[in-house]
Image (cartoon, rainbow, N blue to C red):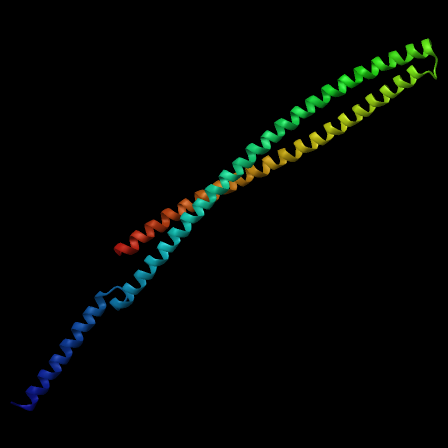
Length: 191
């Protein structure tokens, strides 16, 4: 065999091997098949972690919404109870005012009948002072109950805002979960 012939065959084989390897490299999406499967598995792992995180966020948002709604119901009960107390205190105020009016009439009658320094007049004055004290206490209770009502209504408003924010977060988390599931599907199937 000729040396020329052996050299030509060797060069032809070398060129053909280079051409085949270049063609295989060109057909792979990222240039090497090993890094593509490596990147794809890390995407799948990341998407799986995102899905788990989103599920946990959804669970926590639902828990927050339930807690806020429970607080709203509790605050509404408190408002109803405080309004009931205010009505009761107003009834007591009116009753005490009627007692004061009766005690004044009785005091005037006893002053005319027994004199201004008698035991009966002193007792009537003590009753009158006690009724005035009761009215002052009932008015303080009314103010306290009204303050509680304002506080509870403010709490209701804040809890409603919290519910709206939590529902918004829940919607966002559900949307993220859908997107992560879609990404996971695309990464697993290589689309």
